[in-house]
Length: 393
Ligand code: PLP
Image: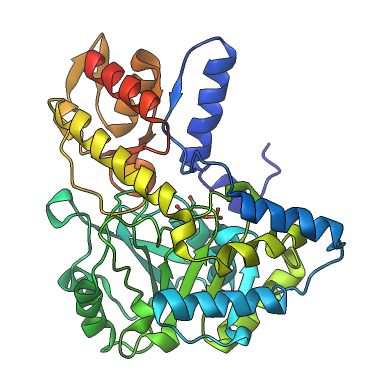
């Protein structure tokens, strides 16, 4: 008998983490797997941030921190919002959490009641739908396609709205598609949203700096959107600090207060040392991390070029993040080396077993025609991986 709760029994395992585990397993069997499944920069944390963490240890930052984060970190976040996004948040509108993942979970738990609908333009980040479900919300997927650069149009948004719609969640730059909503495109969505004042927005901007076109736009900066937008960000991607687990929100003060109340019962304040290091990261000019952004840009071009040479891969041109999301549906129904490819999961598994390259099925992101390939890997690995893929398809 199953003694586990229905909640956990019905929850999907994170597909990206599952692929990482499978990769580790195959490697331990001696297979030479190139892992392109994880959303993790392959850079080291910049030295000036490491130094701040070392200093924090010596300065004895060892006690519980305030639940919502150190006041001077929240001030650094407020300054960052103003500097990079033109957003005015006071420090009582900011909550620091153990990664943006916890920020998202906090918001779901404090905003959603059972049956509340959350619009997710698909493809969306793998955890959104399960976080919504844990909070007893109902994910409502709005499929987009490569033809619209995987972006939701105002008409699609309006069509998905029902009297039960409580929120819309999206990321720009988008994981997994790399799409970036321009200010004009966000204005278009805002025109619809202004008609529905009770709909809230999660704007997940964790890839903000990994943007190859410049000009990141925050929906909270658009007329009428500020009060109802929860702007989510963090240091995992831009500063290569994934393991240090710091994320944050800027939101209306009553939402921030509720998140703090919830977080106070389940985890308390985020890691003290990592919070101190985050102050150094956010106070630094963006030019300090430009070398990573430039490198991602170069790799994106390389991967697009190499995948472009493979028949059957249909690609958009991602403008940010560090993923490509090719449509590989032309392989469906075909038999490759004795394996029948019926869907994107079959295809990702085929690449793992025959090319020794780990990717992630698009099904996990709400798009069953695509796979996600992370290019947060060295140029050498990327070249080798693309050559291997080419050889088996
Ligand atoms: N949001 C998006 C779109 C992501 O891709 C990720 C990480 O993969 C996160 C949030 C979570 O980031 P964190 O490491 O801050 O929990």
